[in-house]
Length: 136
Image (cartoon, rainbow, N blue to C red; front, side):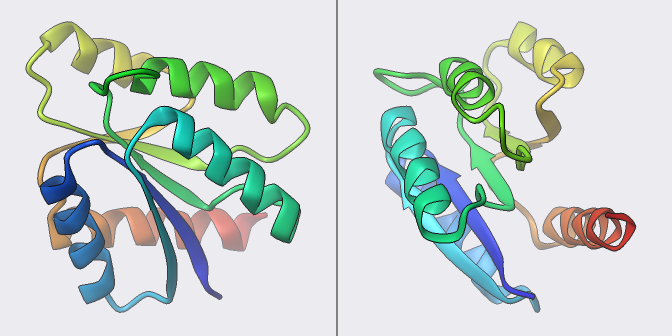
């Protein structure tokens, strides 16, 4: 089954590294990249329009100009109440240690990753997602 993965990161190098890591895995992915929280919300609307569901996995940077990662999460929760919400993995440099603590306890965040995303961590995510889908 093809998983739709949304990468939301304003750092193009990080965006590329995350995309490359995902492409090198053994999964089957449709990868969408966005450079802002606003673009990420638009991509979610497009996904719902096209397939009546949100992306399966979102890799989200927290620190972005405009709509930051926290605001994106709030909008995701409020705008898509009627849909199954995706697994969100925060992908951040975590220069702010309070962000790490908040991310750990946030209900929408499935995990957090220090940049760059590693293959081993991606494999853990994919196993978790596979298990989640077989249970549903």
